[in-house]
Image (cartoon, rainbow, N blue to C red; front, side, top):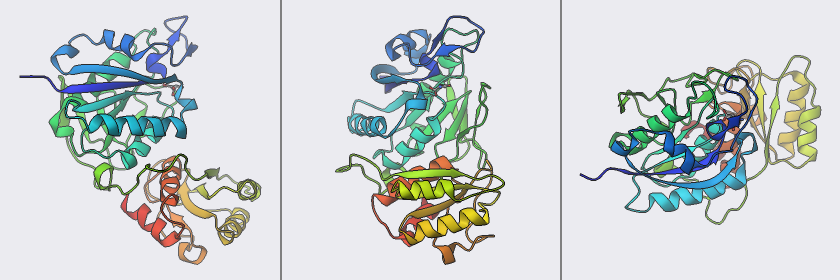
Length: 330
Ligand code: ASP
C-alpha cells in the first residue's frame, strides 16, 4: 500500500533556528532549510512520503500579509492535486496562531493543513522541533484529519486554529486552546481526536483571495487603566479601516477611549470589541451597548484573530450588521 503524500512548506522560525550554545537563549530563527530539518525525523519514512519546499526562512515576528497570500495560493494549488494528501507548515511560534487562523479562512480544501514549530532552536539541548514535525506529519497524513480545518500541532497536542494561542514566552508547552480545549492528541505515531471545530472554515468559508492583493488595514488598541483616545485618534488619522479594541474584562472601554471609538465609528471605521483577557468570550451588549455604538463583539476570538477576521470581512462588506454576522459564524 502506498503511503500518504505530505508536502512540508518551510517558513523559518525557531524550529529552523541555530544558536552558538546548546543551553543559552541567544539564537537566530530561520537559519536551516526545511530539507535539512527533515533529515532529523528518523522513522518518518513509515508514516508518509515527504516532499518539501522553502517558502521563506524568517522569524515569524516578520510574518505578514504578503507571505500569507503566497502561502495560501501555494497551498490551494497543492491541495488541488491528487498526489498531495496533506500539508505541514514549519513556522515560528510567535505568530503561528495568526497564520493558522488566516489560512483556516482562505484555504479551499478539506485536506489537512498543519502548522508546527519549536520553542527550542535546532542546536539546543532537548530541541522540540523534530518531535513536533514528526507529530505534524502524523496528523497531516491521517484521513481522520480531513475536514477539521487548519490545525496547530505542538507538544503532542492538536489545536484548532480558531482557539489556539501562544501563552508562554519560553515554555515548551506554550500553546493552549483556552476556551474549548484541544482537538486531540498524538500518541505512538497516531492521532486520537476528541472533537471537531464547529465554526465555518476552509471549504465552508466564503472568503476568497482571488482578485485581492492586500487586506484592509485594521489596528489593535490595547486597553489599560487611565485610558485616553490618543491611540484611537492616531489610527483614524492614519486612515485605518478598522480598529480592534483589546478591552478590559468583557471588552470594557475606558470612557475617553469610548468617545474616540464612537467618533471613529461615525467616520466609517469599523470597531470590534475584544479583550486583553486570554480566556472567555467578549459577549454582545454586556456593559457596552454594541447596538447603540454599532460595535461588533469578538466573541471567543482574541484580539489578534479578531483583527484578521475583520480584515477579511472588510474585503466583502462595509455593513457592520453583516460583519457582526461573520463574527457569529466564523
Ligand atoms: N521568534 C521565533 C519565531 O516566531 C520564535 C519561535 O519560533 O519560537 O519565529
